[in-house]
Length: 195
Image (tube, rainbow, N blue to C red; front, side, top):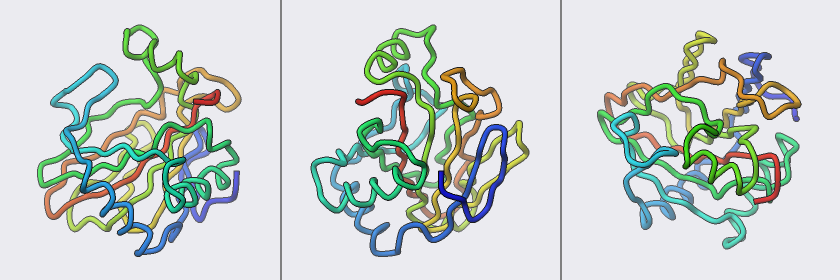
C-alpha cells in the first residue's frame, strides 16, 4: 500500500490520501451518477439506518471510470478485478448512515450470498466527490476519528485484521447527519477474490 498523506490509525489501518482526484474527475462521476440514482439499500435491504441515494457504475464499462478506479487499486495494492462496482452516493440534508461494518455478515442470507461472489470485503476506499458545508463526517467511534469530507480526498481503511478475512470490530464506522448542502462520495470495496 502506498503511504497515505495522513495515517489516522494503524489497527486497523485508516489512511487519508489528499487531493487524490481532481475537481473535474469528481464532477465527472457526480454527473454520471445523477442519471442513475436510486434509494440506497444495506446488505439486508432498505433501512432507516441509511438515508441516501446511490448509483452503481461498472468500472470496466467506461474508460474514464476504469482509469479512476485503477488509480485507487494501485494505491492500495489490490487487483481492480477484486473490487465491486463503484458506488456513487448522494446524501441530502438529514441524510446519514448509522454506524456499521462493511464486512459481510455471514449470519444473514444477504451476507452469505455476497460473500459467495468474491469473499470478504477486505478494504473500503471512499472518495469524497465534494466538500460538505456542515455535517456528513465519516466517523469511527472506536477510534475516536471524524473525517470531514473534502473534495478529491480518498479515505482507505481495512475491514478485517491484516492478512485475514476476520472482521475487525474497530472498522465500525458511519456517516453523521448532513446538516447543510449535499454530500457526494464514491466507494470501492475490495474483496478476497475476483468478482
